[in-house]
Image (cartoon, rainbow, N blue to C red; front, side, top):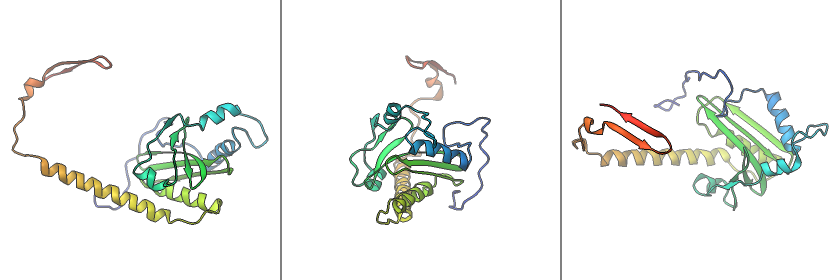
Length: 208
């Protein structure tokens, strides 16, 4: 969406090779095969194990915990734990264990999800930047597949987006109001020239 709110085309993002940030260089058939292995616990349809069972279990174990606040609390009001596994965010969706991961790159968004206990895998790809459609569709499909009471996930995510945009506008207005356009610089630019050292990054030289 452009500044006026209308959807407009974005320049293509050059990707000579796949990178992990949402650039799914794959087909629907590829993703379906991958998700079949996930819902089978690391094995193929004919029973050939590709990932050891204990390794697969470790992949879904919480390696660190994500604080449940903001959007996470809205989407998981009954959840006590939300955490990063190895390559997956593992959470509870209305009593169902869910492993998911999404990514975004200029003009595209991807969401891959599977429910290890319910043998369900979902991949949602779209070509709208920063949309929440992927999660709304995924949650709706989980609810229908697992026969859970329906929720209007479109409305829920619309409210999340609207609230976030309103908060951003308020923060920008407060920042602009606090600015003093007549305030003079603390020092002339030449005073900032010199060498700045930091153990982790080394020395940076600033020239006027």
